[in-house]
Image (cartoon, rainbow, N blue to C red; front, side):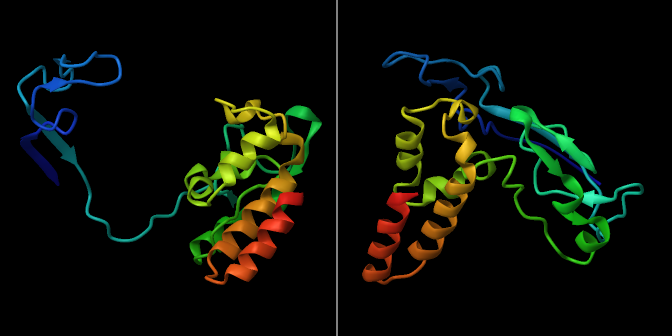
Length: 180
């Protein structure tokens, strides 16, 4: 099936111009997507969903690769970390049955795994910056990476206790987390 139509340009909201952080006050540039017309040609070919298809040859399914080349068996990653990938993720059959894999906590810290969730937890990112000794622009620059297991504990504790509406429990959690 195919969708083919002219729509309002989603990049400039139909104005034909763009004014972002590179443009000074009161100036704009021609939208490079619609070339100033304000309209955008949207074409999309698709198949109606009839059910999840099987992909032959797959043995394991992981939630993410976190920028690494992943596979099965024992893999040696940077900083001399070895991970038995057969113990991570889920089998393809488990996935097809509805089981979802979890994060590979030995490869990635919570910020690498789910920045959105980290930013939703009050104070979590600020504590990351404190622990790393500075505001890091790339997560892989964090000097605290070797202690990511403690960051995962802090992530799970904060997420669990922030879901509770009890100030006493939250204060106890904050005291515990401050030590992590």
